[in-house]
Image 1 (cartoon, rainbow, N blue to C red):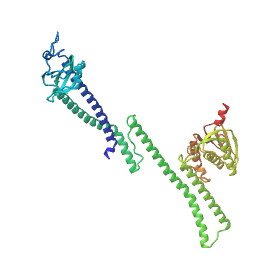
Image 2 (image 1 turned 60 degrees about the horizontal axis):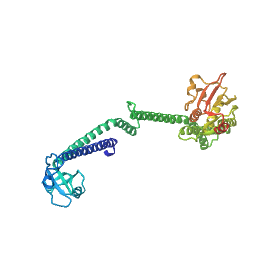
Image 3 (image 1 turned 180 degrees about the horizontal axis):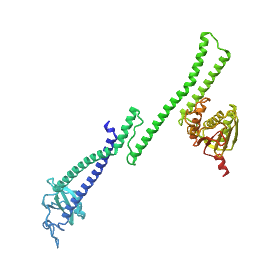
Image 4 (image 1 turned 90 degrees about the vertical axis):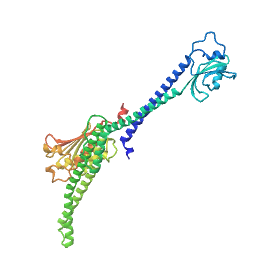
Length: 451
């Protein structure tokens, strides 16, 4: 498992990268030193003179022989295979050396061997028709030097790799320390479900931004869980009343049947009507809870739609429910969900009709602003900021039917469509709700044609 940790992988990557760089540098240094040493030997061989003194005894001497200090091994070779004469160790002759004696050319430098197997650095040069001279020096000292250089470079490379591994480990520990804190925080949250855990944020680098994002995520999750708890608690509180009433009424009906004492027909009718009303209230409450619980996770795809037609459909449904609605609607096209927006408009109209029984509800739509006004008593100013909260109900409306979720559903639907909704007291009495939705006076296709 340790090899799978990010710290170990980062250390290994840093070590491998530095080791590769050191190996390339050491190899390049070795090749440069080797080349320089060989060049030095070759220059020494080349600068010994034009002809060695040994040539005087094997070939006619030239008119002006140059100065010469004999190398450690000198040998004359002939292209016709005659016996050679040499000074020092005899050298092994290759076909390439005979070719130089035959065709001329040189000097040619190469590695070779003496007859006794000693490694030699050889220079072969033509010195006359069918003959060449081979000057050589032993390679033992040079090879020892190269071996020492290789050992030194290997030792330095090993130290470099060890230092790289140490530096990589320190870098990994330092760089990943914030990641370690983040990991421990995540593990702590996973084990304890404590969403109040926060990670200290220092600096403005990627790790700091990751820590800030994590803190924002846990804050959002904590808020979501708190809202979920509040929703469950509020739902339980709201469900308790109709369930208690239903149970009481049903108990009365069962006791009447069990004791054999029939209820008064009028009382029984009122009791059954009350049971039916409680069932209807309970169904509405459950439907509203499901609508709010879906939130942003489940909703219809947003498409371009005529909002004025959506409002017209909501107005017709409100009239079927007995509301007196007067409408003045102008064309407006928005992008959203027709079902959600229609329900939001219907909730605004139902809310207005509930607070102005027998009065008209005025609905108007112009340039993206929908206004729904009633002629009821209005609301106290201190209650206006709470009207769109879930399960909030004005003290004056506690005796009226409803769950306190209608306006919360309106706020959610409008937010999904990118708009805003407000509720205020209207001049002259009553309340007015305004819904602003972004859109256009014509469909996009129609506006394109008009262009």
